[in-house]
Length: 359
Ligand SMILES: Nc1ncnc2c1ncn2[C@@H]1O[C@H](COP(=O)(O)OP(=O)(O)O)[C@@H](O)[C@H]1O
Ligand SMILES: [Mg+2]
Image (cartoon, rainbow, N blue to C red; front, side, top):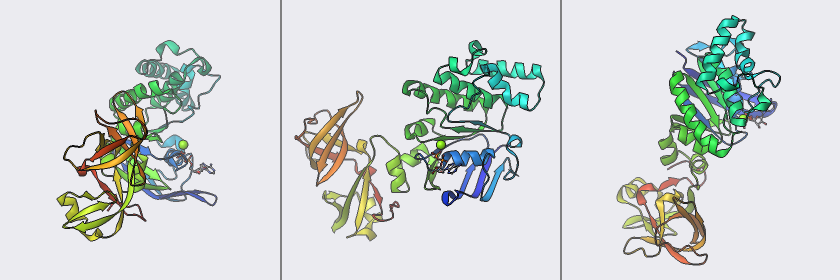
């Protein structure tokens, strides 16, 4: 049993509050991805669980036991730091075995464990090298190996892929997900990279301003964001926000576009008749076309286009606002050309204009 539970945890550094009455529950064996912008308190959260910082308020339980005041070495956690924190003068083998040596385990047991872990991480050939003789990705694996060698009940990974190059990062996140399944371990994985968070799947907690903004599956976070911050932080290109008013004429429609709402949404938003709202609509739910035929479309002027191979994004202006839309096959792509934007009306999300909360 190694579920992790934070209850009402707060932490400030001097006058600066970092985490504010934060609660988080990670069931045994789950991979929980904590996603948030730089400086939002992700590392602080992990350091509190590891015992490298003390909480100001609240409790932390691991496997049902209150470890809020337990020293780090007795919490059963293995942490992988953002900068790896390898000892430069030690070999790979010595780095991996270091925590076991600290605990005065038998030399043979350490050697066996180091060899097993190295094999698991494809480091067997590198055991006698020093960190400076390794690539970024290899160092990252050594740091991971050092955590694994301790057989922790809980893994804490602090942006483990931020220092490896883009191509390797994509491969390694798949490997990490596989490793997590084979270790059968509870993991808290912290990242500022939303695509990494979505790709790792599992449960995602979006953190901002010291609070968890939303916790859910990747699909929940992407398709049903609870507020504007979550909607805007996840997705590339980012979601379009358009400010307007919901008007009524037999049915609700969205000004400035005169976009009629589907019946169900119209009923749900009845109370918003005549009010300002912010529409959130993802770029892939807007299709720029040359000829819209008879379907509803918004006339827009092309600003620029971005060809990415599998998809082209068109940035255009409609009613004084910039929109990003997916280019249909006949979409005009030249700056200044006119296009028409079709809207997938099942994918409209509405936010309060002042609080940013989903309505
Ligand atoms: N030891 C510390 N002393 C003072 N301020 C700190 C300390 N550690 C972190 N902070 C501050 O706490 C905030 C959150 O930091 P951190 O947890 O490292 O964020 P993240 O990992 O999400 O980038 C930042 O404003 C940072 O400057
Ligand atoms: Mg950090």
